[in-house]
Image 1: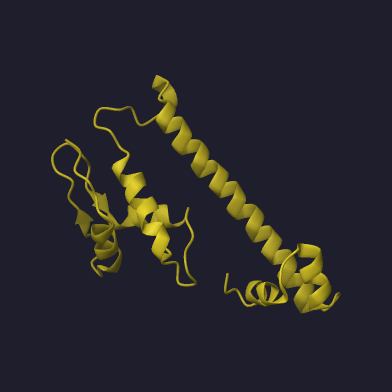
Image 2: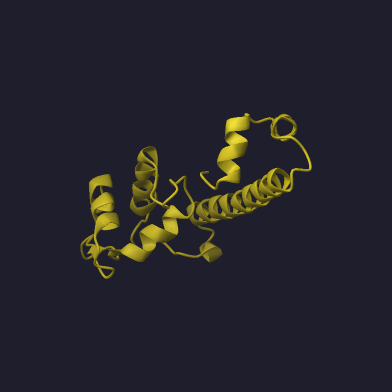
Length: 139
């Protein structure tokens, strides 16, 4: 039987100051260490402090609860679920890199004053407020 990890447990572990704290999932599953939460949080939407947004805790719970005992963790056994998870992680990594590059370009354009913010916003198809958020590192 799967030991379900709840969003409340995840939030509690996230707030736990003890870095060696874990969520115990019983004998059939590995415990969930705090480091695993940080790794998963790197793949979802977070606030300026790196804390998952309110609607993102459930995504972490889904990731943690998707593990099946005895299932191979690599894609070697034609494990389609592991392949899907790996593909999603790669897609999110590439998207984050592209977003980071795009945001750096926006910041450079605003700081260098080579173009007015209104023109930058128009070229990026974003609001001026969003351009300022990017410039200030608020998103």
